[in-house]
Image 1 (cartoon, rainbow, N blue to C red):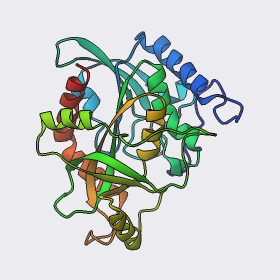
Image 2 (image 1 turned 180 degrees about the vertical axis):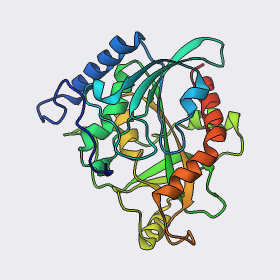
Image 3 (image 1 turned 90 degrees about the horizontal axis):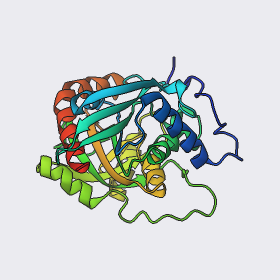
Length: 289
């Protein structure tokens, strides 16, 4: 299956119908997750990008794993390295209390051609399921040679270069502090060496050209990828606090001495997996306290 041929979404309200309220669709999906998991409330949500998939296992006990196509509005990802499930994970937070995380392994990328509503559906569902914080992760290209493949970087801001928005109509949302400074400090309390940078989302699925990478650098960007920014905007609109973390899987085009490939992304993610999964799990435990 190619990256642009994702399976049909799960049953339920037609999210593609312009008359459908996307928040009603998210509420329907959250109700399905509650029914299938037996967990009435999730405290935090995780969107696990390339390289981050092991974090759910490290965080705690999976009490339910649901095929994406069984939840309204979701579909199995057509991208290698991404899970096709939603998981409810029970874990013990840093304050000693039991919490539940909704782990969204079935991310829809904008380049899959399913529309921006599908991209935003995961974070909207997380908010409808009770979460007040979402952690958005990704694998990305880095613009700084010091950030070797396998380096986690906190997202401090973004450049949305997709040419679209997940918001519809006259919906005006302040994005001044979109990526929470408070949550970044929590992350640095786990690892004080974490750097931060500005993430630029392109539409994809092709990688950026060297000229586009130079443009991003001139605009103040530090990281380039094909996810996260649209989700972050939708998450803020839904009332979620956002923590973004990128895993540098390769140097960006024009900086890397070798051609870019998805295999390189997967290899870098696999090599860094155990270390970054332990890091993310501890960050989530402290966030949820």
